Length: 403
Ligand SMILES: *Cc1c(COP(=O)(O)O)cnc(C)c1O
Image (cartoon, rainbow, N blue to C red; front, side, top):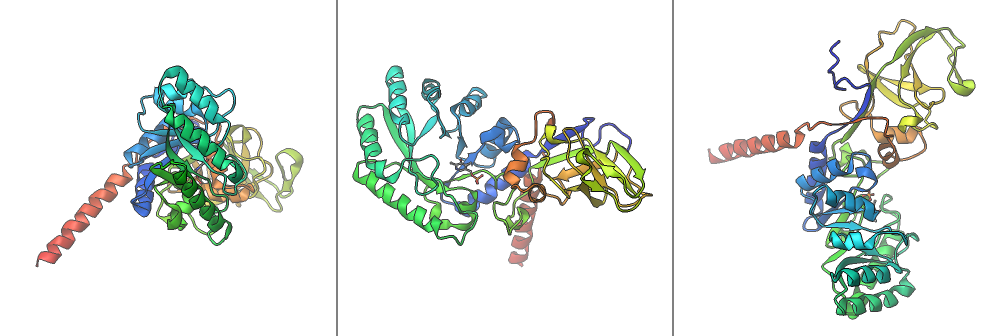
């Protein structure tokens, strides 16, 4: 294919985002956790997919809530026209709570924020919607259990005065990606206790939530009223021993470019900075125009790239703009301009494969793709195709059933 409008639409490199896959994944999770509601995490620019693209697809797929870390992220969504409930849970003294309350952005409260939020509500004469967060063992954000009664008293007090409305209580799990670890049981027990203490203090919100993707998919006892899912929505498995496909999820992001150079080299040729790798036989090298300036981890070694119907491996150090794959044949048929896919699409390669090559996890790989890589949103319609097939299947089975 010599047309410039190939899969990359004339771009040199791109991530291709599929909203249909996001919709499919949200539906798959929603069915699995029903009747619990689904909050989709769209923080960090929608895990690298584009916050608005991810948010819109998530809502189209049936998400009830959106979740972000920062109020600034929530404001961006609101100001782009998203009217769904949004929760933001990570704040600093500089967080603009006034802007948040004005825009009806719900706020996660771990402690000190309650006074700042009540102040903003008082200034606006509008109650702030809050979700109280208890630290049940993660040791990051969240109210320590010994301070929980104090936070509940403050919350009840502000609620009575009409400054806040507590609509949720939540916690975050530390090891749900390892379903056999008992710490999750301990966290859930503490969470149930915290909810009971809140009830005794007259705080009885409708939304108790604890589960991230791994807990949503492995611990029904963690579903409560709502789950907060991120990585699964983006087609990724949070488990070391299961792929996204194993979980019925579809890849939502493809990272691709084309081979920018091919050359034959003799045995002994060194590759890239530091000459950390030398080929031990005559071969050909393919140059891939993506580097750590694009979010490809410099630490990655032996990382996969699909070119045509084969997967090749990276050799030598990843540089700022480029890295090299060994084409394993001095007479290679790979040519300049051939499509090169790092992960996603129908490459059979996943962000988890790149995570394994770079001592990290799929979460980091998809989230860190740099601003220099353009994003293309291309709806595959795969969820519609599924729906049609299902409808056809139903018709056929009804037809058979009639006899
Ligand atoms: C990011 C985040 C989630 C989503 O986690 P996944 O593992 O991606 O599903 C849920 N809750 C909180 C508090 C988070 O920060």
